[in-house]
Structure formats: C-alpha cells, structure tokens
Image (cartoon, rainbow, N blue to C red; front, side):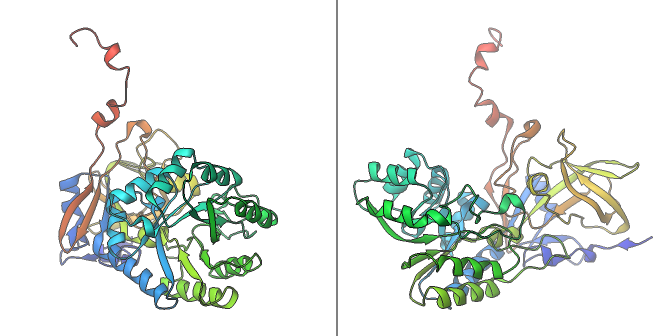
Amino acid sequence: MTELRPTDIDLTLYPDGAQLDPSGRLLIGGCAVADLAKQYGTPAYLIDEGALRARAREYVEAFTSRHRRSLVLFASKSFPSASVIGVLAQEGCGTDAAAAGELRLALAAGADPARTVFHGNAKTDEDIRRAIEARVRYVVVDNLDDVERIARIATTSVPVLLRVSPALDAKTHAAMMTGHDASKFGIPSDQVADVIREIRREPALDLRGLHAHVGSQLLDLGQFEAAVAALAEFERFSVYDLGGGLGVRYVSTDSAPSVQEYAQCVVSAVHRHLGPDVELMVEPGRSMVARNGITAYRVVTVKRGTRTHVAVDGGMGDNLEVSLYGQAFQPAVIDRAGPAETVDIVGRHCESGDRIAEQVAVVSPRVGDLVTVPTTGAYCYTMSNNYNTALRPPVVFCDRGTSRLAVRRETFEDLLRREQLLADTQPAGG
C-alpha cells in the first residue's frame, strides 16, 4: 500500500510562501494551518498576504516595463472584499468594478476612482449615478440603454469606453465565454459602427476607446492576440481595455502561462496591431488572487462503501466552482503521514452535487483531520452562500508568521437580522 507523507503535497498549487515546518505541518504566510483552524475555526479562507502583494507588483511591473501607458485593474468580482481590494490598491493596481456595490467596496478600501473602470451589462440609474458621482476613470458602455442613461443623468462630460464583441469563441467552459456575438456582454461586432455613431450624438458621452473580454480561465495565449487583432478591425482609438481571463493551475497536471508570458503576448500584439502609444488596460482577477488563497476544512465523517465519501464542514456554500463549472481541485489531508486512499471529498449540504473533488488520493482520512484545498482565492468567496443556512467563512490574512482577521465569520444572528416578520410570530413575552 502506498504511503503518503506531508512532503508529498504539491506546494506549487499553494501560495509562493507556503512551506512545511520541520514537523511536517503546512504553513501559509508563515502561519501553521492547524493553528489558524483552532483560532478562527473551519471552514476558513486563508490568504497569503505577502504572496498576494508580490503578485500585484509582478503584474504592474510586467506591463509597465513593456508598455509605459499601462494600467493593471484588479477584477474585484473575483474577490469582492475591501481588505483584498485595499491591499492590491496599495501595490499599484486600479480596480475593475462591475456593480455599484463593488464600487462602494473599492472606495471604502481607499481605491482611487481615477484608476477605476466601471462595468455592467445591466446598469441601473443608480449604478450610473454612483459611477459618475465617484468620477471613475471610465464607464464602460455595454448597450444603448447605457447611452440613454448616461446622457440623461450626467451633468458634465463622462469618459466612456465601448465594450465590443471580438466575435471569438474562447477555449474555456461555456459559462466563461464572453467574447462571441451571442454573448450577453457588449455590442455584437456587426453593430459596433452604428453604436459608435449613436454615442457621438450625445454630448455628455466622451468616447475614448474600446473594451473587449474574450472569457475566463484562458490557457492559450493565442486567444488574447486574436482579440487584439479583432479590435484592430474597428475604428482606431487611443484607449484599449483588454479585460482579463488569464487561467491558472488548479491541479498538478495543469499548465498555465506566466504573468510575464501573458504581458509579453498582449503588449506585443497591441504594438503590432494598435500602435505603441495607446493607453492599455488589463483586468486580471483569477490570475491575481486564485493561487494566493486556500480553504481549510475539518473532516466531519468518513463513509466507506462502494465509494469512500469524506464529508467536510463546508462545501458548495463556500465553493461553487465545482457545481457550476465542473472545476477540478486537488485537496489534501495535511500534517500527517498515512496510507493513501482514493476518496471523494464532499460537502455537508443536502445536494448530491455538493462535491469538492472526486476520486483523489489522500492520506486515509479520519474524523477531525484537516483538509486543505489550494487555489481557492478566486470566485469561492465571491459565490459563498447560505445553502442549508451555512454561515459564510472568515477571511484570514497571513503574513510573516502573523495572522489577522480580514472578514469575520458570518453568524446566525446576521441571518436573523434580515427576518423582518420574526418578531411578529413570537409569543408574547417570548
């Protein structure tokens, strides 16, 4: 029987600062996961703050060193926490906000509105009003209703970009494809010229450039070059926002381009197709934060039969990526050695689809074991929910051996506060 040791864990899927201490305990940002689990409970999102800051600096340097007029915007939808947005803003990143709530989080975190781009395919009057009042760098026009709303609400000229479809089918999950003409996002390629004319009829809209986003979790750099080439087929502008979409490794067998390779590809394509003097923006989300966060769980029960089901104290309430996208993850039973066992890691929710990983080899699990799932820093916190009244986990920053609470764990009292009729149903004196 194969024996697994703590050193068999694939640390390349974990934050750059992850390591094992002499006794084989897993450390994130210099903090033992076991100690963090005792202090903050499980499930918990653990963020290596130093690695996150380093990633932001890597992104900014990769683009500004190759193209002086570059701006890296963090796609806040990938981790909409003021704590995370604030850290990335401190390291030189702007913000991509796709809703008024994300904009409010960014401003509360100290993000510079002049380095913020406001998106949304269904902006309300309130969304438009807040973006204009904040004086964001650009409002991205996604449809003609955006044009009407901005023209009606604005009292001064508003710099805008037009989101267009580059008519490309990205090589990714169907739910992550956003650059084809049937997408709900942007203007279909055959309508772009007409919409540009409509925008220019409105004095309140100052059209500066174009925006395009092909899709998410893209691992083929050629798709980014194709998007740039497609933008060159439209009228030329001085500003281009190429969105995000760079993919990451989730399991050991995955491969993904580096930030340096991505920047070289994008900038070279921009210089070749659009010119060396344009203002260039990119909007990394997943590739900025995914690897820098992990989730820690406790094993609640182990059921051995036709398949071995290892149920942890979280699941689809804190990680919907498996259920929504079929995303593969690589969990590990940490901090001890033992015989390998092939198991399904499942959640505690009343859904058969509540799975974290299927048929993975881990140290033969026992109740109370710690399980970590790497590369959960993107979209897991975003889509956390209250299925079966699960309470959203805390976010804990770890750096140089010290931890701090960034977002506290949700409480049952938080849920009850929203129940407006509850008091009316209680017996007198109850």
